[in-house]
Image 1: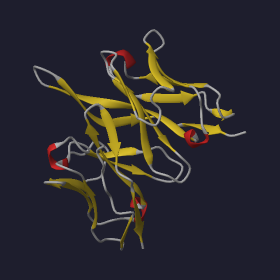
Image 2: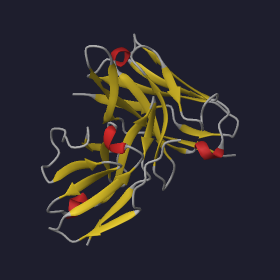
Image 3: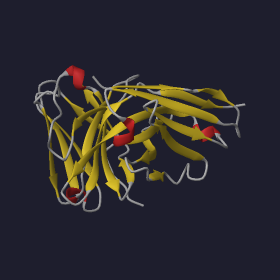
Image 4: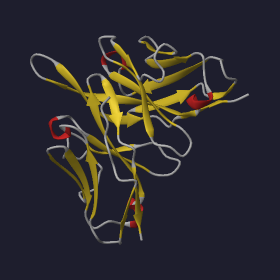
Length: 106
Length: 125
């Protein structure tokens, strides 16, 4: 079965750039998205189709892809960005999520 | 404004059944791709099931044969019928809308752009 691999945790200092990776076989050729989830809240779509931002998502969130890896980048990270982040793609008609990355801003 | 409201969660004994509902407003369930995603306590997101606008369905291996996704077009509501529940089905269950990306010849599923607030299902004796 298809799998997406994320690092369990990433730490960043306020104002710095955070990068969260997600790897999967030929992931760069698939439709992929990123979600932010804060404690006790529902997930929120922050990046779709690798590098597009939904309306209302700050410009500091960006996405990129290269081969088997996609990357979520948060520029000028703020304390409010501390959350769990999940990548997501598709395996035929099945939704696949990565295991999630806890972003700590310290 | 799109709103998805899940109901039907609760405490249920192992082996029991439960039906979750997801009432939608601001979108039409019958012409949308709709999905269920769950999250066990302290764990990550796990996809459960999807129903496409044409009625085709798909399930995660962990629930196949036990769960059934359906919709009531007249009520603009999505359902998840859960049978033979087990302790490891304990989770918050979210419904979500999946975007569609269509070419002249076909459509593909995209991102989960709208999510409900979730409903907690606890399977325990």
